[in-house]
Image (cartoon, rainbow, N blue to C red; front, side):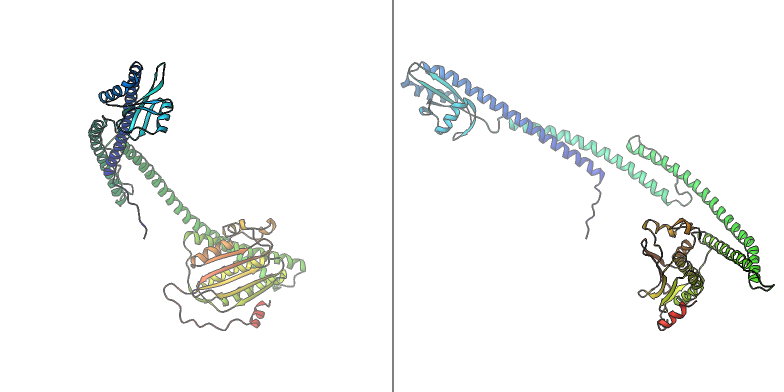
Length: 498
């Protein structure tokens, strides 16, 4: 189960951010103030210890040795500090403390002269002052307790807490008020946009009134401008669409009229050339027969071109309709192979058919047109070798017709282009033999059948086109089809004969 992050409510989020930032700022100021107060307290304690050390050291110079202990004890009691008289090696001469530091600590204090240290007395500020007389040289150490925390810390924390609470509370109220107003404006804009999307008469609806001059107001103005631009673009689109539909109708009518006007003389030309080639009116010389053959082939090519253009126009305009029934894909393929066998024999190419009887839910006429384009292209662009056609069932609901040739192959960057209108691949001199509509029309017809066409090719290794068509209808799954025996090698041989 995936956890989805829900957006936080803006009305509660803004005050929460203010409280968090205010608390963080108050804590930062408190830490800074406490650190500053502690530094000042330590400085005061060090100054007190240094002053006492200097004063008492001067007094001890004139006091006899036997009276120094009494003086040190009395001074410590009156000043509220601890005193220690030591020699130059850290040895204790007079102890005026509750518990003296270790000798190592005393030696470090004599070297440092002043500072803060943690001793057995706790955290203390110490100061050392030399006591010099003609007969001796000693040092006086003064220990003053360093407060932890500093004495004014409690009032500081209390004052800072009260002031921070007042400021954070006021900022939270202001943030809540602003967030509520912004949220109300956003809800208003969102409700108006939802209402605009639900209108049936006008897709964009009316413009949204600008209720504020803040960011939401600027956003509303920008949305209104965008909506007006979109409305204008939609009006232009509808106008262009209507013009395009009119153009498509005019183009279809023009193509239909042009087809009729071209077919009438073209059929007459083909008819007369057939009569002349049949030598009904007398024998023909070899040169005349060759010329008439060229005229007949050119006429047939022109007729096929007209058919391709009309089919493409019908597909694009949606006027082409399929009449789908269950057909035997192998039977249709055999008929197509017999027609193309003559062309293959003239080029010296071996055309073979193999496979099994397989049903296809297709339009028989359009299926024959698809296979004629695919197999005809394979024979047209194969200069030597063979073209193998195979029909078989693929899975439970698909029939495949594969066409494998030994032609020049198709480069990877050209494989998608050959299924586009008026596009071909290969050498330029071979492109003149067609219009580039055959595979484009075949792909569209296959798509209309709910199938697909695939290509596997490499330069110099030939190509394999595979037409995949549904073998069952969507409404009624074909269960009564009884497959016939697979095509034997003898049948293949008969199909391959010219």
